Amino acid sequence: MKYKNLQLFDLIFFAVIVLVILLFALSVRAQTNEFQASGGSFTLEKQVVAGGGNQMQQSSLNQSGTAGQAIAGYKSSGGSFSLYSGFWTPETLAPTAANVVVGGQVKTADGRGIKNVLVTITFPGGQTRTALSSSFGYYRFAEIPAGEIYLFSVAAKRYTFAQASQAREILDDTQDIDFVADASNFSEPQ
Image 1 (cartoon, rainbow, N blue to C red):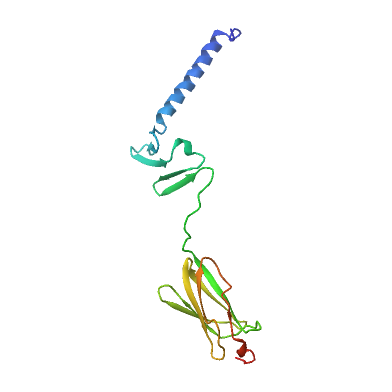
Image 2: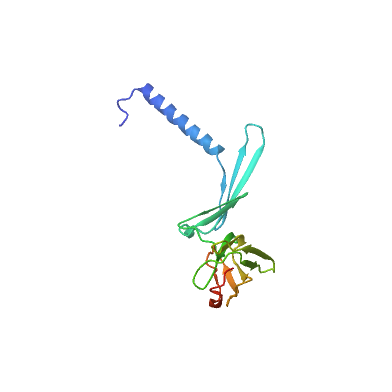
């Protein structure tokens, strides 16, 4: 026998230690969370007596998915929290309505910037905002909601534009909405 060399006292002490560990494990198991599970979706429930104050706190976690879906992932939600777990996290399917910056340059046919040109952006609802081009012809509009089609137009006293308006779908920051004055305006100063 394996315990041949142990004295009777050592065997009793060893048995008491094992018994204490087993009792401790059973008491911890009895105090831990109780889980309820059923096929497919399941709910994990946790019950805690808070700080000996005899108040029961209960929270639950809802799990959706199937047993074979672990590689694709699960979406768990409870209270105000949500968690997605799995091999990959799915991307959102639609663009978000984040605000972006749009702009460009108003320039002559030979590429020089034209200052003080009025640039107007018209929103899908009909609202407008305006900006004046800088000394190098640059303009910009900040805080423009992405995912919409906007109309950009220019107006200047001494310049004409073959394409004075552009309709653009704005999905991200855009700095290439340029306007080029007609070549017949080339030599006229502003």
